[in-house]
Amino acid sequence: MPIGSVPPGKHDAYAVLKVGDFRSFLTFRFFTTLAFQMQGLVVGWQMYELTKDPLALGLIGLAEALPNIVVALYAGHAADRYNRKHIIVWFTLLFLVGTMLLFLFSVKSLGLIALFGVFPIYLVVMISGVARAFLYPSIIAMMSQIIPRQLYGNASSWSSTMWQLAAITGPALGGMIYGFFGVRIAYLSVLFFLLVAMVMLGLVKNRPLPQFVEGETLYQRLSSGLKFVLNNQVLLGAMSLDMFAVLFGGAVAMLPIFAAEVLMVGPQGLGFLRAAPMLGAVAMSLVMAHRPPMIHAGRYLMIGVAGFGLSIICFAISRNFYLSLGLLMLSGMFDNISVVIRATAMQLLTPDEMRGRVASVNAIFIGSSNEIGSFESGVAAKLIGLIPSVIFGGIMTLGIVGFTSKFAPRLRKLNLREMS
Image (cartoon, rainbow, N blue to C red; front, top):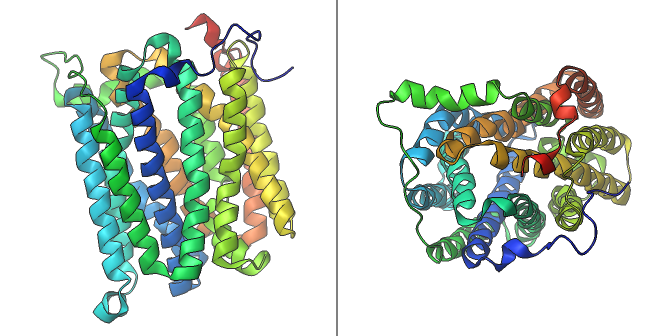
């Protein structure tokens, strides 16, 4: 049965793109994601060139995840208490300042890395982690204010498509610029795309402040999002499934080593390896925009995560560059099924006044698992070797799917059509 169950002719796949503010907002997300992905690749390759150590690559993820987790709940509270567009502006600027610092560190004549080692890079990555912690819940919450409820699923598909397109272009472009023009030009390119993003955000109309319940203490507001998720089996199961799958099954942090020592393709090849999962995700997003997985969403979610784990295992075994690209594309296709289903369920189940806080909990579960997963991958590669560590992660992902399917029956039987 094909993804989705909406009969042809009864679903307008482009309905949400007719909303002008959504188009501008989507373009803003495209350029910020492009910049984030470029910077992630450039920092990873620069760190590998400086240290030649897989653990150092894993520590990049940890340096971003820890501050992200620490401030995430407050970031969600802020998104539900203050003007969401203003939050997005200020923390995009903070990320831009971090990129400027990375550019300065890469200027050899200043001698900062020679003097301090790689510590300044980790420090900027931590700053970037704080910026992204505040950006995510405000972006998710503001997007829900821009579009009507009946278009949430359609918006999730197109938002994922644009995110993945940027995530394809970012690593490929970052790798090419780094390989041909060097690290400084790469960081300047990131700055340029962040400035373009700010221009596009300026075109989006301000939205009213979210509804605020008077009399709640800060602790009550910080904890309410977490309690809401913990008491909802669908949201808790979906977030936990994706968190552990990414934690154990992600191989992205180790791609610089695969590119340099296994596939022998250098920074240019690394850009394509980083982009391959995103290309697969874009293809699947377009399928789901036309054939949304609404009725049997839970079943497709389980299939998607299991397929992701199998693809990662096969990637670890491959020694052919083009086969590896294909397997990474396949992993992105499977992964994006769960991304769209989880995002749609979160929008449909969450009251508007709690969107920021619930999104921040999702960021802790999902966003930070990428960075902590990078750290886990680095430690595992150091202890048991690169290839065995990635195979182990894929096997763990399959086990997690089985566990979740058994103990979260409401998630397994999820029907998004009944909720919309």
